[in-house]
Length: 92
View 1: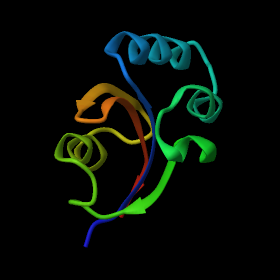
View 2: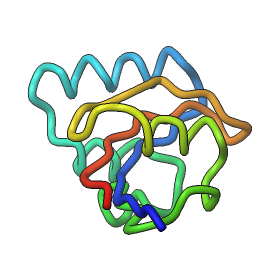
View 3: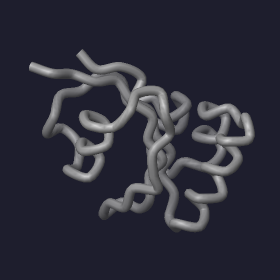
View 4: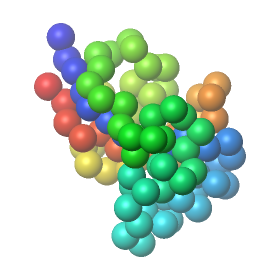
């Protein structure tokens, strides 16, 4: 079965996600921004979600992790939890 490793930043608003995405594009460190801004418990690990299989996350999240380009920040992706910026580190 396929697996992937990803990290994300979860925030309440699309505007906040877009602001953070601009900072990332400007060279800001993903892990530092996740620690400061993410609403997810993974924030303390720099947004690292570890390795997981399809179906473990929400569909919108899985669609990015298992279908979009690796090592690229995607989003904002809206889920019931808020807006995510997602970076897939690897897929197997």
